[in-house]
Image 1 (cartoon, rainbow, N blue to C red):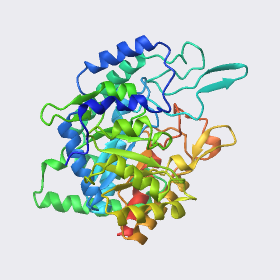
Image 2 (spheres, rainbow, N blue to C red; image 1 turned 60 degrees about the horizontal axis):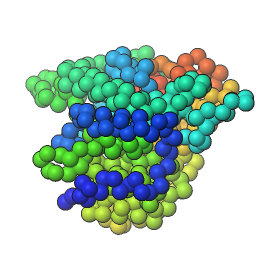
Image 3 (tube, one colour; image 1 turned 180 degrees about the vertical axis):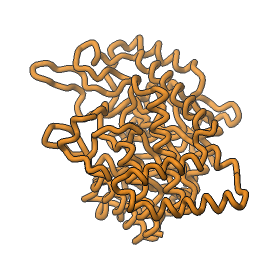
Image 4 (tube, one colour; image 1 turned 90 degrees about the vertical axis):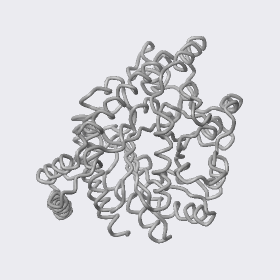
Length: 449
């Protein structure tokens, strides 16, 4: 059953409060860019979005697990083959560990190919006696603190589109062209376990996977699924002019899809029921998500369901909780309990990153891997107590050896942060920390099942 209204409703959001939108420097240029975007080829296709919705319906039924991750904020300079390959490799490595531990399919969603904009707490930034527009991501302006760079430039939306197209093209080539072969990914994990200071902790699970792989090879099992993987793209649907310009009416169904990504989510700052973001996303057919922070009430969650998925279509709506390690065990149970009793089919995913950010002594924003893991542990504990399904994790990571979060097998501390602190916004787990997390989450999943 369709949850979308007629295509004519796609501009109803324009009459509602739209938070976190840039003050674009030139409205005429913005209109011209939007018109050009509207004529560009789709980045994804309606059938792929429908397929992901089916996979997320499996998650809501407790038959699959989501691994969603990638950059906090992608950059144009970072949209190159090596960076994309490294992120994808890390995601695939994590997925193998989680698939084996959970004994269910893992739905792989990249926070990639469109995550070029970020909400900000203040519209401007002040340094000394200079005040300039805040950096809102490469889709809006530049990171350098000067007037030219910080201009809210509509032409950047076109560059975001083209960078997204290039990233998706690489992801499709890697995931369909043999790079994602299960045996190769498993070999990468064996190398990680052998080199990791915490490797002994992971040896048992890695050994089990190795024996399973050897057994399947001996039996002659060699399905296509071993050689290529399904991979989906996602980003926060923040810049409404961009998302609207990339919304198309599908020729087969006659229904609207936002073809900028397979999966779009509404952020904690923009999920107002009477706001423009909820209004826009309720009309598109993509599977969608909503970030829920620790102040969210159960009634808030039910109201969002009524607005975004009134017909209770499985796979349509995912709640991504971002509570913080110290809050999740108290804040999450009332939400899950009331939503579960309502009968609404919701997939629950844990974002253990955004509620656990703090400022280190040197002024760097950072996160402790122990806090990230503790929030995931709390997420699993709550679901186990309520008899519901912990549907997945949503993390910010990079495939590079950055020093932005503390902890992990290599024991990064706050004094190490300056060495390779490269994020354009929030701190990300590096490759080693991400794989540490995957093995630790695998242990949690086994305990909860």
